[in-house]
Length: 318
Image 1 (tube, one colour):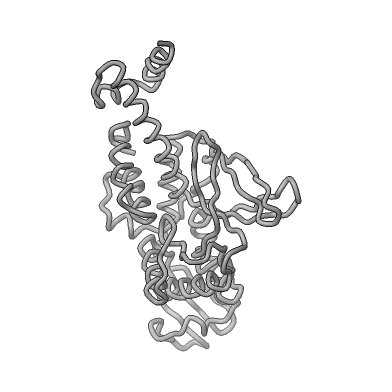
Image 2 (tube, helix red, strand yellow):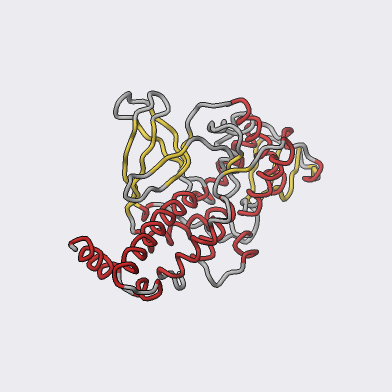
């Protein structure tokens, strides 16, 4: 994980304040893989990036993830814990593209990369003038509703990727973490249309070869909508098997009404919110200790968390 001491983490946090979702996700990923260049990180499969961020989160904040969500049916607040050790399974290394055969269609495709997701989301934003939200470009803003499943019901997003968003999911006050909730609401029609465009753009980038009845179909000339729903569904299923960490989606049963709410855990947003909460608390500690003892910020950051807490308790005791 490289050097992720307090000073380095504060520098990452400070740099991230000038960015939005994708920029912050890249900063966090560079902290997880300091030896890798930005271009290399953007070219990794999405699940590889997610696995790196889960590993970074465990190293910084431990294995227990506390999440608070709102029931999409009755609005009841729900709180639950997740074990970060169970998340972030890395995709297997592959020598070639994935292959799906369905009826007269045979399709080869590669797993989406982080750059693919950002490009697809920006393509949609450029097409309809809407902004792109979310930590990594998976979210197409302007709706606040969970995107429908694949273009024609074909799986949970193209190639297993969910390109829509819902409202916020927060952790408890100790961590103030944030993820994305897949809840119905807002302008669902706009969300569904934007998500369908993003899925088509993403699939167009990831197609390697297409054959129909044994005859090659140039992938760059193939309207994605021409692929039948069973083919698109198989593409999504194959991608999910090959890269399960790319889309961590939870079905949370409401203790009040019993209905299940579908929630997508966006680890980049969650981890950034934790880092933001930690950084602001640490800066307050620095302020209090500097005021009380006249120490500099580097001197205070050099103290262990236990010793900083002890000195703060002495200040509070007068």
